[in-house]
Amino acid sequence: DVKVTQSSRYLVKRTGEKVFLECVQDMDHENMFWYRQDPGLGLRLIYFSYDVKMKEKGDIPEGYSVSREKKERFSLILESASTNQTSMYLCASSFGSNTEAFFGQGTRLTVV
Amino acid sequence: GQQLNQSPQSMFIQEGEDVSMNCTSSSIFNTWLWYKQDPGEGPVLLIALYKAGELTSNGRLTAQFGITRKDSFLNISASIPSDVGIYFCAGPPIGGKLIFGQGTELSVKP
Image 1 (cartoon, helix red, strand yellow):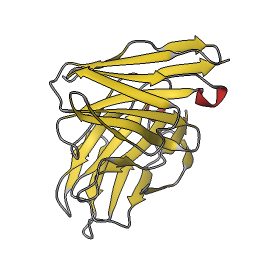
Image 2: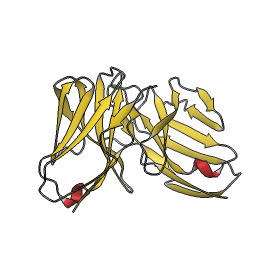
Image 3: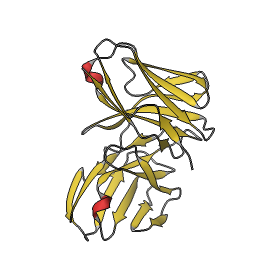
């Protein structure tokens, strides 16, 4: 089975802190994604990566950056956390850009 | 960005009832996916559809890839309390990346 693992289930950070959310997949997938999920807004794509060191902006990249130094790991970085970034963050991976994606368990981030 | 229109947004049903939800798009899709998200967890893939007209079952779940390739349906028969959660449709428009519907939140009353 595909396994996508996010480093934390719950995080509480202070406004202005730099925050790292880590995601690791074990299926040698080319593509990795970061979404945020908010009530009534569904899943919104922040960034995705289709290869090591490659990244593309999704629909809501503002306030975020990403890093993919190794194929299995995709990190989401909040340079200076703000309260409006309180959300559920979901990492996913897929073999192709338009094939089924497999999700991690999610990280619920609260910025206070 | 492009969106899928998923309906209904929420459903409150009695245990044992059947459930139907659907997704429509303005673009043609080659693949339709249905996910379920349990409270506090990440979405889990339920059914993948690859061909127009395809009807696929997974236990009490049945999904169909619409003939027009612009819609898909998910049915749950004889619902049980553990069916509670949010159901998402997803798919890639041709040449595009995977996008998700807004979700259907299902509540089942024992």
